[in-house]
Image (cartoon, rainbow, N blue to C red):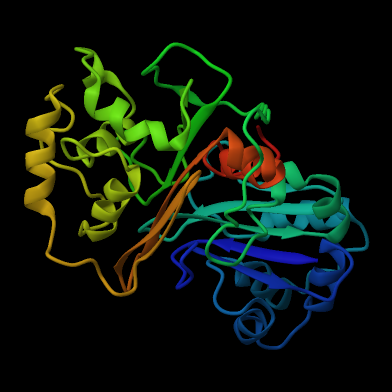
Length: 332
């Protein structure tokens, strides 16, 4: 079984993935039900603190709660005694026979954690492959030209060229986006139809669209990072890796449709060098950056990939798109 914590982690992917010996979620909770020191047990089992998870075990000791014998009993106990914040509609604790998904916040950022058993992981790789992936960077190999990829996930479309058989996808995982202002109230990835990744930079800087300032924020941010004459979008992500702060964006990005003023504002934000902790991997059909922010927030991430990469890694691609569409991988 797997445990995943999507939070302010030291990992370049901002998540912690731990393998557990238990066969089911119920087995794990039963094993720790009456532990004398819940905090220490969670730290040792799950590789560190998990915000609010200790509350159910503290309530066990305080109220002498019975050890659950079924998933229904466990679900009732979690819904009543597990501490989660911001759950006004009672939808942040989601338990099935093969997975537990929980969303909460730590008063600074949203976070989610997951228990996924082996049967669930094997049954739904198109939902769970990226969630369970714990190594940087993602693989770079690609399919041959003409390969087909159908994502089946809600995305936002920005049209730079007429539709074609290939597309570029943009997934930026950050702590605050002007599109939503909450890091787990997700708006979804962006797709640029009709392009491959090597085509993207030239079309972004060359676009003459008075409505460009209505594009999703990340599309405008990526356009602002491309310099005149550049045909390599990797250089834009190199600049992104140098940007400071947990919500980097030039002041005029939401107001100015023209490219040059936004680029000028962006260049003013850039320090001379990127933090040594930041990571970047550039390949012909995928570009990846883990931008180091500081010791509190850790990293954010930006992935650009096209149909040729996605066709070679369809489960990883679909699950990454889902990761940017909803905090619960079973929702979309």
